[in-house]
Each structure stands twice: as structure tokens, then as C-alpha cells.
Length: 162
Figure (cartoon, rainbow, N blue to C red):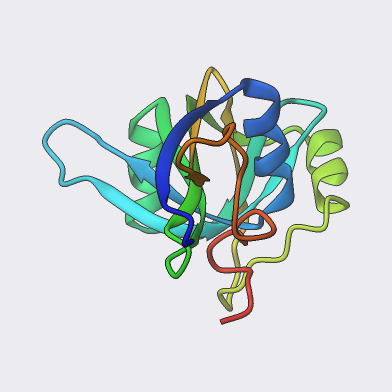
């Protein structure tokens, strides 16, 4: 007899969302300034547990300009396993600011943040975690108690083995 499966969508609590933020290094930054087209860019980042914020670096350009014109940003990470039809996503919304305090910059330089893009990225940016939400879609056997199937949790996008 072959087991039948269905999928289930589960809301993640804040602690799980923050754990996932701390476990990945690539996300998508979205900024919307009235009168401008939305700016959405992939960025490498670190999650700074001491300030509960997303930290990334930027050069001059449309991303930095949009960030400086807007005081809020949205940041998204995810992990997806298409073959198993499972995955998760976390979205952070919060105040964005450039870090300029020299002591704070010195601390952040020790965070291990390594941008993938070449060139000078002198601007250290922070997004606070004012609003944090997340969801996980998982497969469950029909008629059984909800238990994730298909092995380990999906690898975060951009960091897995493809």
C-alpha cells in the first residue's frame, strides 16, 4: 500500500525565524520609495544577535540611495526543496539605518560578513527586526500526525548543494 501525502503550511514563531536568519548568509532586500520603482536586490548578510538586526554592506548606487531615502526596508530569506515540495521563508520588516559609530563598525567588522561582490562597499547598513514572520510548508502523510517528511529541513537558497 502506497502512503498518500498532503502539504501543510505552518507559521513559524519569532525564535525560529531568528534562528533561520542566523543560519543563512544570502537574502533579498526590498525597498520601496514613493515615486520610484521598487528596488529588490540579493545581498550577503549576517544576523547580529546583539542588536537583533540584519547587517549588510553597500556601495553607492540605486540600492543605497533608496535605503537612505526610505527609513524602512523588507528583507527575505528562504530554503526550498522543489523535488520534495517543501520549504520555508522568513520576512523581516524594520527601520533601516547606516551604521556610522566607529566602535560599532569595529565590532561589525569582526562579524564575519563577507560580501560576494567585488569592489569597495564602505556603507554598513542595519535593518531592525520590528516585524518578523515566517512560514514552512511541509509534507505529511494523510491520516498520520503531522510530521515533516523527506529528511532534513530544506537548505537555505543560495547556500545548498545543487
